[in-house]
Length: 385
View (cartoon, rainbow, N blue to C red):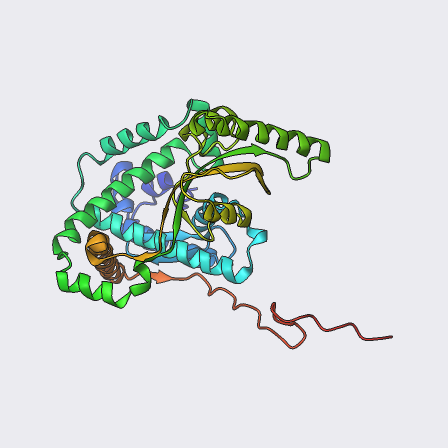
C-alpha cells in the first residue's frame, strides 16, 4: 500500500522522497488545516449562498414569505397574519367575512404599524430605558387586577391568541417607544397660540353647535321581543305597578334601583347621561322630549320592553362660546402637531433602515357593471316568459 494515501494518516506516512517525507502526523494535520482552511471557508460560504437563493420563498401566501425588510428588520407573512388575525378577533370578524380588497388594505395598514414599531424600537434601544422591564411587569400586574381571577385572565389571553410572556414583551416595547417619543418629539412641540385657537374655532362653526338635550331617569321592565301576549301583559302590569309607586310619592331613585332591568342605569336610580335627538330609540326620544322637566311619563313600549321616565332637566340648543372650548381646541391642536412630528420621525427612521415593503398590492374593489345595479337602484324586473 506504500505510495497510496487513502487516509490522512497515510499521507503522513508517505512514500520516501514525497513532499511529506519526515513530517510527523500532527505537523501534517496543522499543515493541512492552515493551507486548506480558507478554501473550505470560501466553499462553504458559496454553498450557503446558493442554498439560500434556491430556498427563497416566492409564494406571498407562504408563512415564510418576507413581506417587509430593511436594516435589522424582517417581517414574514406568518408574523403579519398573526397580527391581522388578532385584529379581526378583536372586532369579532373572520377572514372569510371580510372582502378581499378591505382585507388587503387592513394587512397593509397593520404591516406599516409593525414596521413603525420595529424601527422606533431599534432607535429607542440605542439609548436603553433601564427600568423598562420593571415598568412592564408592574403594568401587567395592574392589568391582571382587572380580572376576577387568574383563569379569567388566561381565557382572555387565549381569546387574543397570545401568551403572558408575549403580552409582557409588547408592554415593554410600548414603554420603550413611548419614551422615545417623549424624548425626541415632545420637546420640539410648541403650544398652540391664541391665534391658532381662534382660527380653528372660527373655521369650524358646526363643531360648537349643541342641539337640545334631555337629562332623564327611567325604569325598564325588560321583555323578550319574541314573548307571547300573556307574558307581555304580565310585564306591562309590573311596569304599571312600579309607576303607581312613584305617583304615590316614592322616590324615583328607590323604585328604579329595586325594579329596573337596565344594568347601566339601575345603580344610579335610573339616571341616564344627557342625550340629544337621534341617540335613543324613536319612542323613547319622543316621550323624553315631550315630557316637561320634573314630570313623570306614562308607561310606554320600546323594543327593549316597557319603560316610564322622569325628565330631570332640559337644555336648549346653543352654540358654545370660545372660552368654553378653548382648552379642548388647544389639546386637539397639540395632538395634531404631535401626530405630524411623530410621522416625520418614523419616516426618517424608515429611510435610515432602507425599509422595503414586499407585500403584494391588495386587489382593487370589483367595479360596478351594468348587470350589477347600485344598492340604491331597484333591481330590474325579470323578463316575461
